[in-house]
Image (cartoon, rainbow over all chains, first blue to last red; front, side):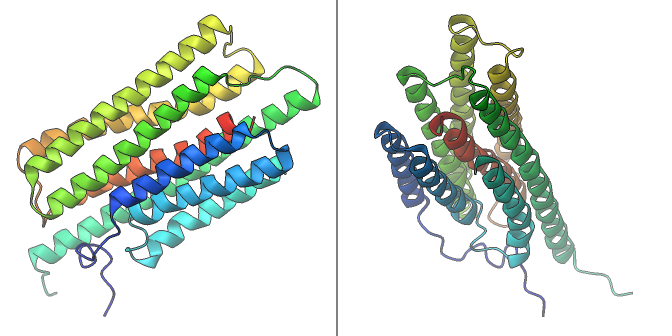
Length: 93
Length: 197
């Protein structure tokens, strides 16, 4: 039987959204603080991009519920996201 | 041909709506990848030619950090609103949607302050290389926030009629996907535009 991606998973216990918001806020503060150390650009940029991608991943996984949804939604979103990340890295590198 | 029960048809239609929304968001992702790429390339060319590039001062960095916090908080409101309607708490959903719209307007107001400072105090315009890259990228994102606020208010109007329940909230979920996407894109813009200068 095909897996129902919608409301069959709706009542599964989700991670506390306030906790996710707390992590996102702390990560944002951390990003701003890291820029105050005037690190060399080749160290600073990868650190900042890593934090940004972790934040974006948290939003997609927990706020957009990709972690609890059918894998097809993740595939639809991740495929262009990989192209996007590849494009940005090529341009930044 | 055997007719499907009405509930199954509605569930199928809801799946299609969500699927369509994810396809739309994936195409939006590529649009923003292009815009962010164009911004990064413009900045690189300016640096390579030894020309002057904008650097955010303490005030503008503080302003945009607060704006980032506002957008993250608005996303939290949407999540809490969806959780509320899953528990059949209609009043709570309306409250969270109202807060989302207010936070969206606050974000746009912050962006308006930032634009006015850049244009009237620092003298930037769409004509200079920084202005064209910056205003295009952040402006199109701002347009998405504006559309999100309108969409939020329309969802709120429907919610006030008591349409949504724990068995019928896909419309709220689809709005939530859009709003979180706008938040997700801002997370990347904040880092690329303001912090990696």
